[in-house]
Image (cartoon, rainbow over all chains, first blue to last red):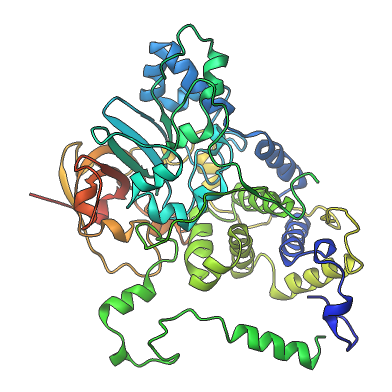
Length: 236
Length: 279
C-alpha cells in the first residue's frame, strides 16, 4: 500500500503485517484530521463522544430489569414510559449531545416476557441496538448468520445458544428496523427469593436482554465466549 | 509505485472477485433478465432477513482502536450536522454493493460512508483526502513500532461557516423522533387493525424488508411520527412525517415452510405508506 521505489520481491522484505498501519487506520486518521482542521467538528466534541462510548455497557439494562423485578411500580413505569425509567438507572437517552446519540434515537420499548411469550431481538437490516442501555452490540448480532436465520428459523438458532423454549410458549421475534430500540425484560427465575437488586442484576446478562438466554441463578456470563482477537485493540 | 509483477498479481486477484450469477455472462442484455432476477440484483444488500444460510458459530470480537474511532467519527459527524444516521445506512449498507458488503469489515463500511459523504457534499475534495492519506501513510512508513497511530490535526478550524443540517438544532432537548410529534396528522390505523404490506417496486433504498412484502399482519402498536427512512436516507429536510406502526405477523404466514408452532410470531416496524387495510 505504500509508495516503495524499488523493484525487488516485496513478499520477502515486507515488515510483519501486524506492525504496518492498515488502510482502515490511515483513512480514519486522515478524515479526523481534515474534519478538525475544517471545523466540521471539534476535538472537544470528539473527546466527549469518546468518553460516552467508552463507558456504555449492559450494567444499566441489568439494573433496570432487577429494579423492575423488585418494584411493581417501577416495572409499570419501565413498560409505559421506558425512557423515563432509564433515568432512574442513570441513563439519559438525550446524552451525550442533548439530542441523543446519532444512531440510537429516542424511542425505547421494553419487551416483557410472560409465561406465554418469549421475545428475541434482531436488526435484520444492520445492527440497531439500545446502546445507551446495553453498550455496543456483540459481533454475532451484526452478522448475516444471525440476521438471516433468527427471523426464519428462530428455535434452531436459539437452540445453538443453548435455549429451548417449549412449544406452548410463543417465540416472538422483534425485528428492530426503524427508530425504536428494544430490550427484553425476562421473567424472574426461581431460586432468587430474597435476593438484592445487585444479586439479581448480576444474572441479567446481555444475552438475556437480547433474548438468546434466560437468567439463571449462578450464571453471570454470556453464552458465546470465543472471541476474534484484534490486531491493535482499543486502548492498546 | 508498484512493480509490473505486483500489478499483474493484483489484476489476477480482482478478476477472481465475482458478484453475479455464474450462469449469466458478465455483460447481459435485457432478454436474459427475468423480473425475479432484476429484483434480486436490485435487492438492498442490507436486507438479509430470511436469506438462506448454513449455521455458523456465533462469535464475539475484540474491538480494534480504529473501529472505535470510526464509530465515534460517524456519530460526531452527525452531531456536527453533516448527516443523519439514515444517510450513513444508505451508503454503508446499500450503495456499497454486495461484494464489499460481505467482503470488507463492518466498520470499514461506516468509514467508507463517512468518506463518501464528506466528498459528495463537498466538505473535502478528493485531492485533499488523497494528499492526507499519503501524508499519514508516509508518517508511519517505518512501521508502528508497537504504538497506536495518532491523528495529528494541524490546527482547529473555525466551523462557523460549515454547512450543517437542521436536525441538530431541531432535535435539541427533544430527541428524534419526538421532535416530529404532531406533524403527521391522524394515524390511519389503530391497534388491532388487520393490514397488508404493499409490494412496492422499491429501488435505491428502503427499510421495509422483503420477507414481509405482501404479508398480512395486525397492528400491534402505533409507534411515532417521523419522516420516512426513504426520505431521511438522502438527508432531505421538510418532508411530511408519517406514522410508523409495529405490525405483528404469524411466522406460518411469513414462511412457507415454517417448522415451529403456529403461535410463533414476528413483529417489525413499518411506515404508513407501506401498508394497506386488509379484510
